[in-house]
Image (cartoon, rainbow, N blue to C red; front, side, top):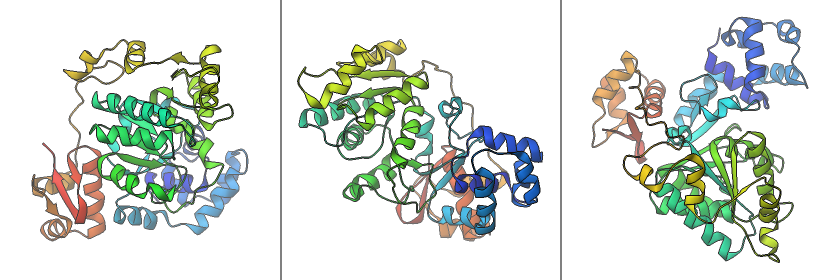
Length: 371
């Protein structure tokens, strides 16, 4: 019998499985752990819609989930599964949430209540500047900036957040290890080191046209609000704005000139009452009952809940490792030797400690204990 994480990996590999479908399987089999070994007839009897059963059967025959999870650890890719404490609370509110997210970087960032910044790839210099300015101010206040790492507005938003030394999250339309567009290789590497890159698609998945509208629901879903910077009519940013409205999230738009083709979508959203006009970060904060002063000292999450998080729970194995990780940095090979476990096991435990915010990975196989 497999594990729940192995079952979630199979569902992610089979594509388009949401928590409702996963829950239906769990209810029918008594546990997701049984998914790897149950008979085909049992799966067919569940009555999953739209070819899901066929895809799942094919994936079970072709994929060894335990082996694949081990490879993820070797690549320093973390899979956060639906139902785990690390899974973003905001995404649990969505009916079409992904069952798994594959992540590189600081997974804690997707648990914050961020603001998505979206807009056209073919943006104006004015739009690029506005995206960078809003992102710098939001990230400087500790609010995660969420975007899609595309050319134009997305890239400017991530750059602005990184310049401020604040949190930023990139949601990809490819595998988390596939850099698209290629010219954002340097930005991607900076995001992995200082922010977070994630995807619902398995590592190695190449970008496809249909992936980008689909990933937009995660961009808005991870965010308390979405800011449209520049959106011509027909822009993908308008899809994100519509999705955010359907999710019950706030939508903001920067107004543009009457004859500016770059901002016709912005003005249309505002005119239709589908977005609130935003000329500054303060116009966004006020919708959540916050001010800059609230966020600067002490910093509060965007929903205003200032409750201190509970101390993370660690297993005996994790505690042994944590005690060996120094504040200056410890190499994984030294930790393997001292604890007496295999490298994949050690990396798996270290990954969980990183998810819990107790250590941070560094380049060259080093891990640093956090205060």
